[in-house]
Image 1: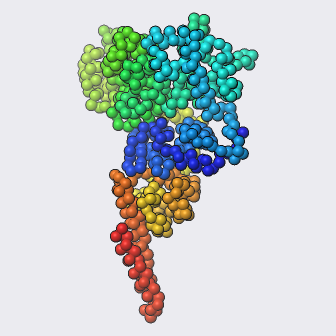
Image 2: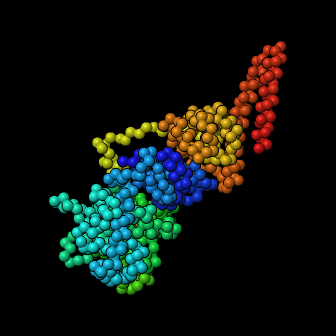
Image 3: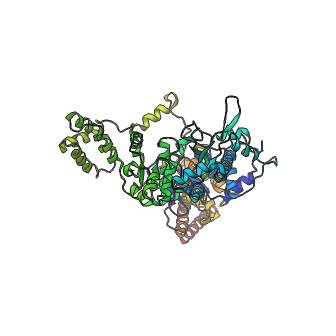
Length: 629
């Protein structure tokens, strides 16, 4: 096993990496002031962005859930990788060669993320090359019959798994991958007698990539009549592939989703391809599982889903399975701030078939003709009842009233209340009463419980119902808002975030000043202890490492919290102003102390009185100089 990565390499990789580039692969970031970015936190659900990134200091922090750290900690928390894996991944991104303390190359452990990623990348290359082989005629015919030419297949990385026992396994072992790594990646399976064989055989293959574009698994479609396996077969759950957290096509769609604040959720790989080729390049699909809460979290981060102006368009087949899928999605709909819609193709055609029959423009018209999801669900619900009978109308109203009551935009509820009354053929007042009762919690629940049951589900998920115990942390929110605390906080923010705008002498004066807030005084002491590296790349990291653990989060927050400035000149003025004000406050305190000593001094002791008077002159001169800055 390789030794530790040299610390100099760890520092160099971090220094060369822009944390905004890495976080930006997962989160849509927007400008939040000079040198500061913000977005929706990837570690918890939120509607308003409280996740701050400061590329200049190399840190991130969420003011909602409290997580924060450097680029390595971000990857460790985001992708559940080890510290060494995070360093190795960033080094590979930079093309930087790492060195290890024993001088040897990196030895891979079974299940090592980097090795699994490499195995999947090599497998994708193998599958894509085999699509052009003579035995892949069935795969090429399958794609051609669905309107996908070789250019389209290449764009989406489509390939072919030969109908042989061990072609892929032998190829990858020849590339240096071990049997354990291939098993851990899900590329090979083990038979009853312990022999390994390719998981995918005789199938057309789609690479499934994470939001950063790394291939983490595959989806495979049956082609041959003698294949008794399922129609679609995916990579099993592995250390890098979790089907509830990946969306096919997101790596291709993420930038347009972020730009347009719109995403189209379709039901299959070929539907994603058809949509993109038709100009709907925000289409994504789940991978062998129903659309769920984790998918919503992923999409909300990419959408920048905090304004309520975005759109999420679902496409469902009109059959019973499609209706069930719609109800499941509607059960989680309120987790989005964006508006949700449903698009159904003419004659129930999915996007791939619609493109074949009517062309690209028809696919675009299908998406443009979307209907609000709650309207779609209401119509689906009404279709279950005989509205010609009193019993049927009552039952339908009982089911539909909570749907109308759950519409997030209150301006829309009266209109849909009237529409429901017309559709049912009952008096408007009767429907209004039912909707009011549902709004007050007297009606039935939304399908699947909806977000109202989040806390209940969370409690059920806690082992034994016991609360999670965490070490208490000091945060900005816990400091208070009195003027003295506010000034101390802002002065520390200035010297932590913008040392280039605060002279070392000024920073030292701040570090030597008395602080009224005891928590900020702890940070001040850490600043004082590390002035030897003031302004260096490791400046904030050194300060954070100096304070007791409960105060580390406070240092991070002070290092990323936005400052009230529009441009670099404003930042310089801000940093100079707040630090000067704090130093002036300290000088004023020292002046009051000196005046007290002068008043208490013996009138006959001219030397003592002269020394105090000289101190007062120097203090006044320093205060005048501060005001002239």
